[in-house]
Image (cartoon, rainbow, N blue to C red; front, side):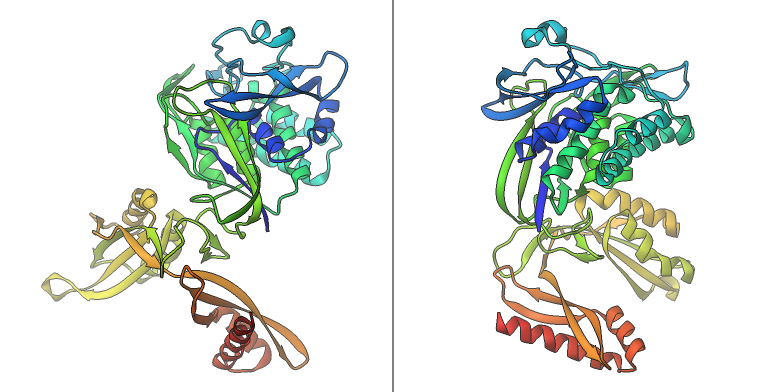
Length: 477
């Protein structure tokens, strides 16, 4: 599977994402539909960040030639604050728009080579509905239009949630200007040109410190960025410096195109590239890394495939079994209703639990009760504990001393059983050590039950046949 990975250890912004995609092999000419529909052009160049050569993308006011400018000799390292230093003010005239008015370290128009005019904040400021209509009028390929609209819907819903308004009432300020639209649509076009089968992002650095808004001073990440990350399902981490590193536009683009994963998946790398941000940091190269290669099978943000753990995400390979960092949470319950206990598996899983066990036990005064145990990643422990307390009413959740577990590599094969002239598929889990030695093959019960219901075979016979087929296939490899 051809997979594109974003590694955002110093955050992400719209221009960085476009630059990282071009560095990964996307053709800059793919930007033509956005350039033709907006009064802007793209200047593509290179710069150096802490010794790393990186691609840059600047959105400029169109001077009439309509060209996509690719000038490797044009150093775009001029610290424009569009993506990494937002004011985040809110416009009281509209009452709900998120004003990403940008603070500047210095004047970009005079700082840029050849006095090019940057399109930052250029054009009219649009409502969410106006942005949707504009994107719909651009004659984009269906997949590109869908991606761009998904990103703007994430932005719009985040703004609406923060301000307590309806989506259609949301008014964009800088995010609705020409340069921001060029970033979002440009990223969608470049992803489509690159054509990966899967796109993932590792946890994104949000930065630290505070941002100034018209309502006051807020900690980083800003409210809209936080809401986008929550809705999109990827993880964010603080630092590594006290500055806003993940912008709402960058978060929305990645939320529309990428799944969140714990770490870079197993990948046979074909190409690695870097998209440069504008500021310079003393110890951290301000780049968004992109990796393209074969591997990284499909999974969700918790490293799972169809609800099952993907062995290629979130732990090291090598040795007999794989090391996986975990937290174990426990609580004792003596008054939980059966309906509450029955729903804990699902509700705690949504909060981040990887496994939930409920054990009948005897408590003080010989009262019957239950011991609830939840296994999760350490970074999810607080959220899982909070959900466990809210769902059950327990007065305390303890974290046990376990810090890791040893787990098998798990992959899934599909067995095809022919019964009565029809083919039926059953997923079979294959457990192995990290050096590839298979030690267990087990059919999935739900699939086997569905085949049994359709064919009249006993469930155990369906499981036996499915497991035998996969074992035979593995023995022949």
